[in-house]
Image (cartoon, rainbow, N blue to C red; front, side, top):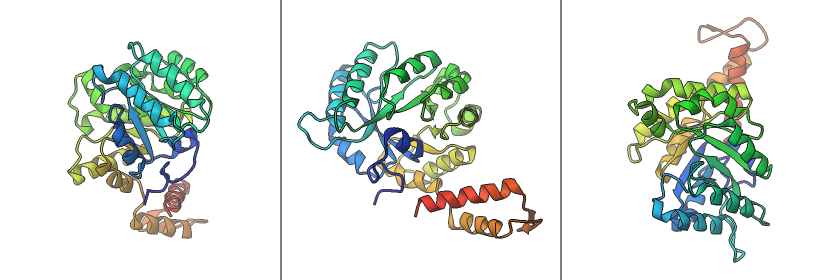
Length: 293
């Protein structure tokens, strides 16, 4: 069964569904035989990748496969997915934009929106948003020092759905170790920028561990504690672990219920004074728990 919020399970628009997604699963654009499996994996949203996961000599074939998936010419059921573009300035970028936006206007199109890699320029992002149908999501992927510095301006571009973090490329750009805790500042910046701009909490970078469930869970919990709203994934085996990290535990729910029960006057729960921020946090926990039911 697909987790709650999965676009394979509910008929949301691109902007609505992408804003609510907890997991976002990448699938290489030149592996069309994997598209249907990704769509059936229970991911909150699928991202067909035309950029990093595709070799240079396979770029054209990947775009063709993505177009056929989201807007099949034969009238078959489309794959509902985001598409990660090639980088702005690359020889593939203009073709990606032109053909994908044309596909988005096809009746019954499954294109949910666009992921913009190496996002740094608010002006370029603003122009792209103007050219896009309003129902499509727009997700800037922050992968550089300039992207982090400009994060608030990127998040404030009208029509941006949410930010996402690309830790591997960011670490390369600043010449840092790629371990999670060496990138705390960047993570905090994206969460703060998203909140300041009033958009959905960002998606964290994927864990590079696939088989080690403990490491995937640790990375996902770190992201949740930072204030991220979900996490990018690079393999279906990561989905359940990541999703669980963002779902309130039974202990969380019981604590929240005890806090709500004490609301309305000076009170203590587990030896701690209850005030408005505590009760508001309890309400959010219960809201997230209800979404999973």
